[in-house]
Length: 312
Image 1: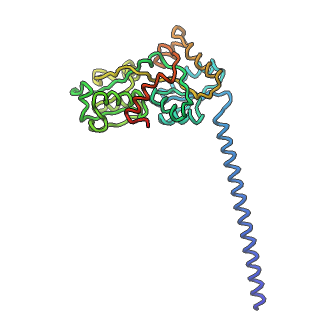
Image 2 (image 1 turned 180 degrees about the vertical axis):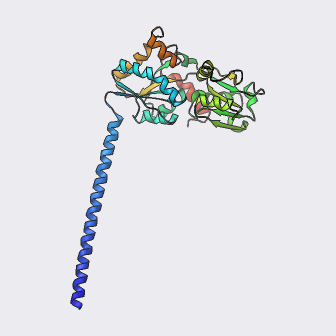
Image 3 (image 1 turned 30 degrees about the vertical axis):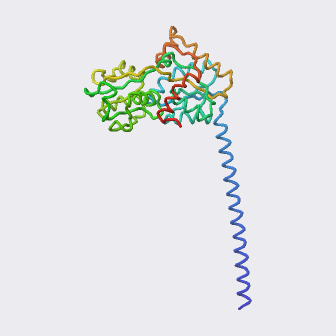
């Protein structure tokens, strides 16, 4: 009996050892398979970041996604013709995503606001280059709008509710905030409440719908909404317009092939309102023409951002 028990115990120990060995082998195979899969994913991601023959373009989401797509379509076709590349428009969910997309080489060309460009420059340690801007962007402006009869100047906003656009918007937040501070009005303490609509057209909708007493937005979007009869300027009216400042630009990473940079720059500078193609594109971009720009043009934006505590 004892001999049979010893044999059984020995067999069990042997079986247990074999099972442990098998389990270890199975675990090792799983680890190796997972490592291989991860390696393939990383390799795929690396290749996805540099797609030969494709120019990946995006824009800060300062308007509704459908509007951004509509505005970009003829411009994308034009850039494809001028560069010889397939042009793909990649929408992003927020302003920060446009910065990260360019810095992390997932996007090649981005329509930035002045403040977003500064954020991208900071995030990339100066490795972002602005190529062109609209002539209108040399002296861009913001407007403050309201439906309230007792709001007629910035000082009247004290104790009221106000909507900005996106937190990273130049004309929908940074510069309106800077001019409020210059008028000795701290939005965070002197107003009853501030909110962020996320986009300029959404700010107008918030004011028109009575959700806030006033709003600050890009003058270009305001003028477009008025011209398209999407807002009644007798109901929602402008009560303050800021002085001019540098704003939007088309930017690329500084390590982009110089020849491609030049092709893109030349394409924008060649747009001519006297041709049907140029007129359509410039009209959609709300531009009379595009002109060269440089990083130094946005120094005042950077200073305003630091003074407002929005850039550390």
